[in-house]
Length: 287
Image (cartoon, rainbow, N blue to C red; front, side, top):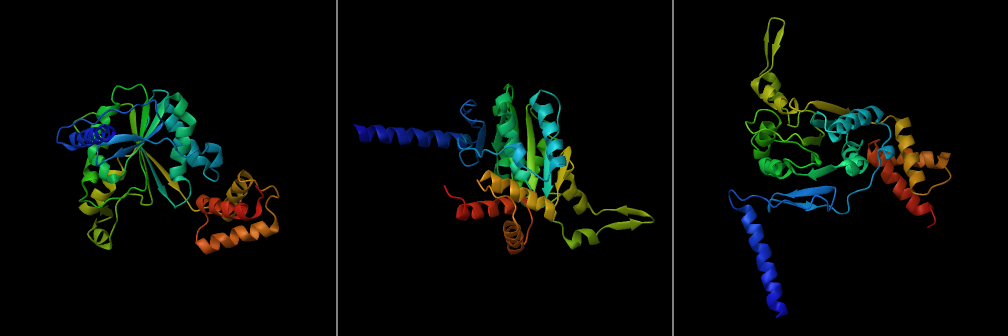
């Protein structure tokens, strides 16, 4: 009997997944109170709760005060029911773009903020996700991490239409926050620039350039991140050293080790500073 019950349970689960993949099938609404973060499963067309979401506070993010203030203000407007913009966070790797989105969720989850993480393949399902959240009291951020496209990818056109131009209205309780190392989300080639025309004193960009800029321009708020200075990098390292239990502060020995670590990694960023702190404290802090 137990084997039969298990078989029927597995068969029922398979049927649910198949129904969700059929044309015209509507995804099942999740339990929005079970978690503050969710991940969109493009294959099954369902939302899975993320129960072990990374706990990071806004106060942990140093060296990006201006960026933090701008996105926090936009998110606060949104959470309070006001108008706000879709956000594109671009620039140097490891400087806190993704961490900012996670910190915002931890800051405002108690006020009804929810985050749905989606990859670019899942963007073709935007209309289904909009249907799931429309009319809900919660406020939703659709979070696309490390986003970039080629022009022929289906998710590119879906996102472009949803941001500005689709006949179907975008839900007023949903914003898109995307991070990318590319300012315009698409690769640009020398051939694109060579097709630019010069008429007198005027510059007329090629159509291919205009196309590649058009998606990023549909984000109302652009926030740029830059490589850390040495002082900013050291300050972030000191913060994470203290966070992981190092009590001696930034001694000459530690300072030298921090700088050597960045040289080996070829980068000064918050991510690199945090990785150093975990390594150093793992070897020197008694538990």
